Length: 231
Image (cartoon, rainbow, N blue to C red; front, side, top):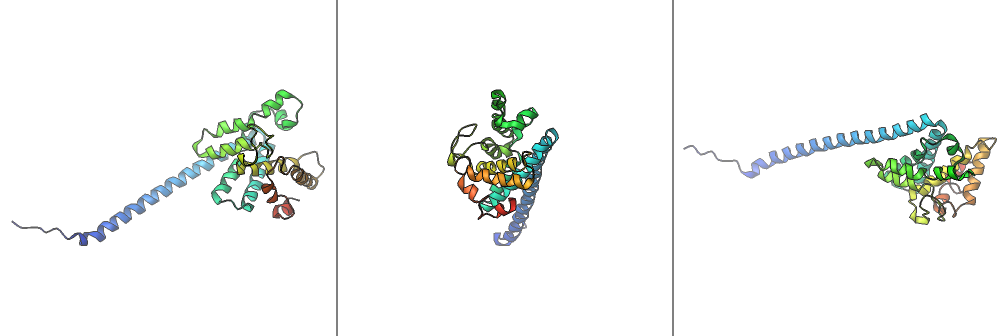
């Protein structure tokens, strides 16, 4: 009988290694493609939500975009990682998603209304936003920040009465950007500049009460680049 000798393992090894390298490369490409598709789907979901907000209430959509831009700047100045900056930006973009569907007069007056029923309805919007976003797996962390953006540093906010570092940092950042935009673009002031100045004064006045002093130091104090940008 003719004996066929198997090549030594050392001879086969380069070919086996090459095959495994190609296999790993192929899997990596497939994973990268899948990740890209998931990421695209994630941002499409966000775009749809923001689009709905703008459709139902154009001023609310504009407010959300400005708050997102400001929150991103503050997060960068505070030295947060790129992933956390993105998380804060998305949460700021969707922070008022719980207001969708509420009557315009309730949205307009917010907690300033003297009508206790309207105040109670408005006060539910952080939790309504949380409930909506928490249904989407990729937005669960965003949902937590949305739920906490009306908490106050002194514990007198809503819905949970959290204080200090019990409030997620992202929510503390959004709180500053949110009130700044609300006052800066209010129709109560004759010019945009006077509105911005009022907003800065309000944030400094309520530093350590409504707002985290560390966030304030990185956003609206004279030492901050944003102070000159916004003033």
